[in-house]
Image (cartoon, rainbow, N blue to C red):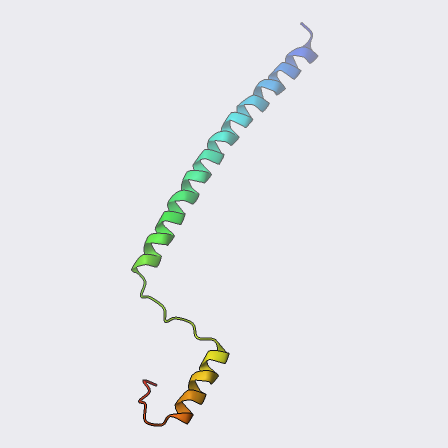
Length: 76
């Protein structure tokens, strides 16, 4: 066996080891992403609920209705 064949075999072995290490890192990264996503969802559930969004057109419509009927009480 020549020296070049042994060098190429060593490079091939180191490349395979790198790929195995890369798979391990990918697995660790995916686990970390999953844990982070679960923590984010859990903290979102604990956060106070936001008020429902009312579009500008709906707000104007509500103001117009309130102006037409002054007998109704408004919360704002």
